[in-house]
Image 1 (cartoon, helix red, strand yellow):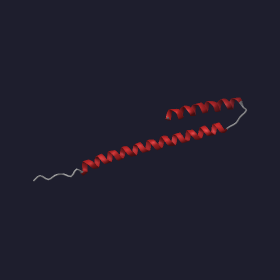
Image 2: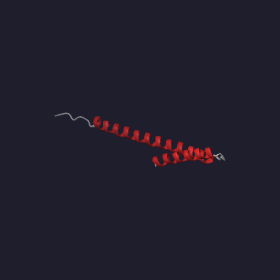
Image 3: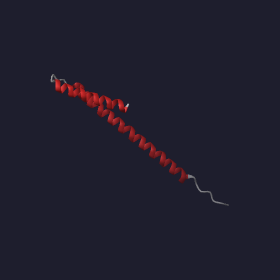
Image 4: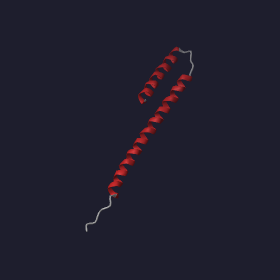
Length: 75
């Protein structure tokens, strides 16, 4: 009788690939969430600043526009 090799080694490789893909997806998700949180905090900081200086106001508006574009890009 021929011996039958267990399927575990081939399956273990498939599980490893699935586990690695899951880890990569989780890492990408947490990285995106961290970036979004940072951008939201920056946005809140800009919105909370009050100034009567026209140059400073222009700079804040430009920064806000850039941050909102990045937020929209992240989705």
